[in-house]
Amino acid sequence: MLKFLYTNHKITLSACTNRSNLDSFISSLIASTCSCSSVSSCCAIHARVIKSTSYNEGFIGDQLVSKYLQLGNVDQAYKLFDEIPHKDLVSWNSFISGFSRRGSVFDCVILLYRMRYEKGMQTNEVTILSLISVCKDEGALNEAKNVLGLAIKLGLVSDVKVGNSLIHLYGKLRCLSEARVLFEAMAFRSLVSWNSMIAIYVQNGFADEGVRLFAMMRLKGFGCDQANLVVFLQACEGIGVVKLAESIHALIFKCGLNEDLTTTTATINLYVRLGRLDDSRKIFKEMKGRDSVAWTSMLAGYAIHGKGREAILLFERMVKDGMKLDHVTFTHLLNACSHLGLVTEGKIYFQNMSNIYGIQPRLDHYSCMVDLLGRSGLLHDAVHGNMDLGKEVAEQLFALEPLDPRNYIVLSNIYSTSGLWREASSVRVLMKHRGVTRTPGCSFIEHGNKIHRFTVGDQSHPMSIRIYEKLNELMLKIQASRLA
Image (tube, rainbow, N blue to C red; front, top):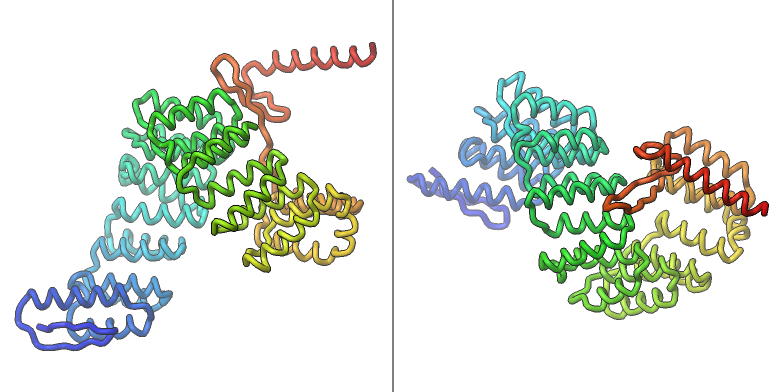
């Protein structure tokens, strides 16, 4: 047997005669593997394993495979994995998990096939969770369907962790109906299950459904935590019902989360969206240990409500207090300058953003500058003088985010403002050709303790016939009053 001493990745060996020394040796090897930061160091430990012990001792072989993957040496990881004799379920799961963290859907699928059909190894919930994770991160819908089928076949959908992960996966892929079916099929729903499903509705523009599900969750006897309260506050933002906002604010105090920074910041955002800036300012002033996110939320509130000077003063206080600034902070600051037509200040902050604070301009910053110059009647000259720059910026934005409708709309607006109607039209045609669409805006009305959702041209409401009849009646009265 051997005794292992490890110092600065150098290995010293001496003869040993008992099991405890072997265990100590293996533990040191594993610790060395976990801490090494280069492929060469990993190879040195690998060589010592070959010379001194077995791959299966203490799962050292699995540890080395994981480390090779982590360091980016995929070929060596595969080679070592194939050399390990008597691979068990832990070995296969560990290897699949490693590729899952690397975002390699292909390798995960290949290993799953080898595991099940070449080696006859049965998968478990750990395997499924790794596969769900990589499908979610990479947006792999077809593979996700196969994973769901496998989970159903193995009877693992009833596992709470697997069920919750599948709901989150289909929500991330914007398959809301599939996510809801999985949610309804769960024999036991944890608080995480409810939170995930509520968040999926809110993040995909169905705030009203999220609110209904939150109410259902409360009726089922589930309590509140930071996660579902923050999501519910976001839902209230989308709906814009004041009484609902006041109710959730009271619930926050009841749950003892009124001093939680994340929850309180979300409450500030909600009151800003509802036009109650004084309430937002009051909450902000009462906050303890305000972080940069809270400061930025308050700055955004001032910007949205046209309080440009207050926004600038708050920004200067942020800088003075050493708050961390980011691209979101400057988006709202430039927006505030735009609302008041502060061209000089806006230009200075736009330049300082990269020159002093090291933050490179993004789409939203260019959009704010377009709006600022447009409101001040300077956009025509700016665009004609920098048309090549504008095209270059647009091309970069299209390359980075080809499916983001804002990129097309900003460029189209630049052309339109400059009177370049043919160019503006071509951008809209390109947007349509690529299948890029904007999420339609919607309105909410609270009536009879129910929240009703409407979009432009919407006829899905059960009383849509009567609604349109009343609307036509009102339009006739308006026309008659104009002729009178």
